[in-house]
Length: 219
Image 1 (tube, rainbow, N blue to C red):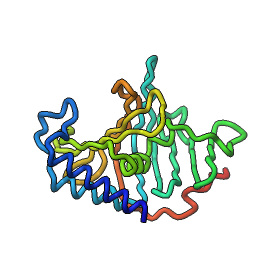
Image 2: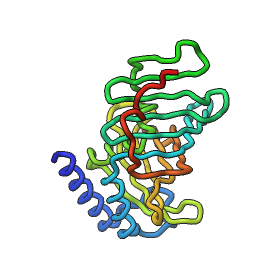
Image 3: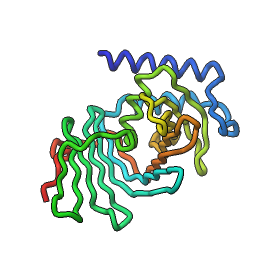
Image 4: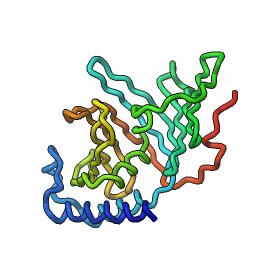
């Protein structure tokens, strides 16, 4: 009931932002006004999402270097997730699983393959679309804008990230107006600098993920 109430509040706030004409984010003026019809369809898809799976490239950007990983992600809105690194080759096969209580890590290159009770970090948890949706629902400091991505039109959603992490202050999500699929999720620091860029190459809403998906690999 509380979650539904928060969803209603978030929807009212975002529609108000659109109608007020103050929804544009810097650098997106060329995209024109927000397509309210597309926004409503995307908003409904995101609010009705209970799980997802995706192929995504994650780029971590520090002041000194950039690291990029190809991943297969599966997650539920209830919090469970599984992320497998499929590239580059030297780290392929690394798996992190959260079953709702404990985080497990599997590294095929070492003999002790399972690490139990690994501490959660924002750098890991905030790369999931489920985390963005929770932040977006929980905050009233959200905005929406029109955007372009490659040859298509997109809607951009922005929400703050809770806490005081110096490199993780806000998130922006680009969603394709036609397919309703996420295109890119970017995490910015307090100065507006990109720190994590997640680019989706495929995305599926609400796949049936049974409990075994979120169990640690045993071999």
